[in-house]
Amino acid sequence: MAMKILVIEDDPDILEVISLSVRMGLPQAEIVSASLGRRGIEMLRELVPDIALLDLLLPDINGFEVLSEIRSFSNVPVIIITVKGDEMDRVRGLELGADDYIVKPFSHMELVARLRTVLRRAKAAETMLPATLERGGLWINFRSQEVKVHGREVNLTPTQYKLLCELATNSGRTLSQKALVERVWGEEFLNDANVVKVHMHRLRRKIGDNPKNPHTIITVPGKGYKFRAPE
Image 1 (cartoon, one colour):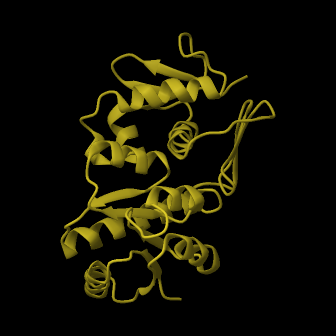
Image 2 (cartoon, rainbow, N blue to C red):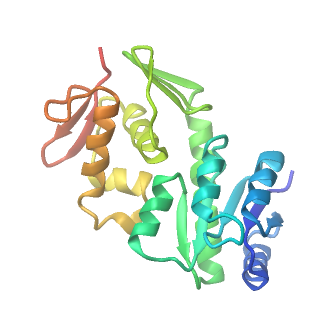
């Protein structure tokens, strides 16, 4: 079955550039498109593509709303493609669950490379993870993205969920800040020293782990963070 790529983009010139890039680098892929955000959401739900490319500036609703709606029912990888390149927009997009963020203009090679990277990452995660994971009092359902601690449902943002999964699936191992940033946010955030610290504080609070005296997500001074299953 051919790989299917959904492009949610209202600019026909950009759509043509994307189509050309995909034909050159991923000739086996099929492209389907939507020029409106709401139609894009419907198509993603109906077609379940392998990956989606999403513009933020759409005629009906903005791309952040589209992404938020998609993440309420689907884990399909999403790459944001937009002219909005400031840091706050990047952070917001990743917080809402985007897998990557590309600023226009971009080259054919960059787009194809990022598509391949995100697809490879998604495939690896799908084949490596079990349906559910239990670590002491923590329970994670990777298909539905449900998280419970001692039977209590915990509502996490997409970024907090990714962070918890990285730690829990590597239980007992110390993960460096660099490794966590690369896996959860991407290499462009390697110079942001606070991104892990801020999200770790919020994640600990949500799972009932006292940020001032944590027992589940342990800070290893000078090395990183280690997950210890809640008892």
